[in-house]
Length: 436
Picture 1 (cartoon, rainbow, N blue to C red):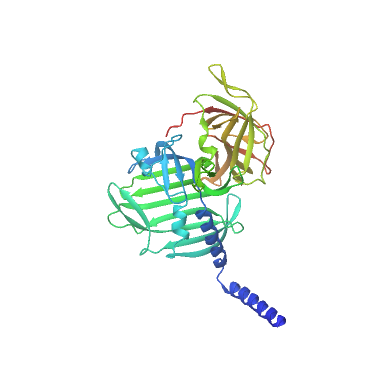
Picture 2: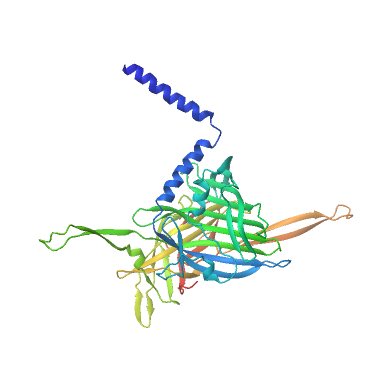
């Protein structure tokens, strides 16, 4: 009997393996990605991040020019997004355009778009193999949303409507995390005067105190082109992400009281109670952590304040106060020469038992081997001169690359094949006001 049971079990295992082998490439992986991402999105707790939107606008037959910069705090409980000015406690369910007044703003970056794409039964996927993005091998799937059951909604002054939707996702085949989502709207109805609407969202895993690790949006892009030729372009970055965890306490009435014990919800975690430093203060920080190319984005880092921060003779932040943060960006590139893109994000400074929000602009970047603020490269292009009897002309090309300037984030390049930024690397900051 035992032998028969063993043979039956072996047959079932072999049959399952044969069935998996018969499936089209990427089918089993897609099922694992969907299952994993559902669990990630279902457990998304209360979290907020500062959203910085750099907006550009190009009029019809004109040139693209900077429009403005909008800075909001976006909060999600896993089901919806709420907005406020940075530092405010009252969040609103109003669309973020209410804070900008004019121009174009988009929402849905905290899981809403992922839920619509990965959770719908009316979306078809096509496995495209693996691609390398920012030094990582990722599995790509193109998808198409059925026009009968969904799409992307737009509400413009010239008209409203729902357009068809297709795009791509890129996921890590080892962890099943979705790293990038692209959405392209098309088949616009006559009432919607658009020719293009593209959204891109890049996600990164962020580690928090206490061991929590969440997959959150890190950056994004939105581009919309009207029939008239007007173009709106938004570059979006998320920083200063905070996790709010509820505590519970059991409370009892006085001895002898017949009342039953009650479960009372306490205030959110101490992260919400961080104080805000006055604007205009200089904070010098020395990095205590060692940054190498083997570290992961989202990993925690530590620093220390090197000089006391004073205001009107009083010490607000003592020297040697710890500064907490995370690795925001760590990418290895090889063109036009080997280099790394590094972004270190500081979110909190703790002094004399008080936790302060680290909301500041980088004003100085220390020196270290290979560290550069701008990446410059020389290249030479050679062209033959028509009718020049073999003569050629050389044209020198000079390219420069900059990184975005974000509150609390030190972004820079490190040239070379290896990255090893030692403790002691210094940065200087100026605290800023928490306004949009």
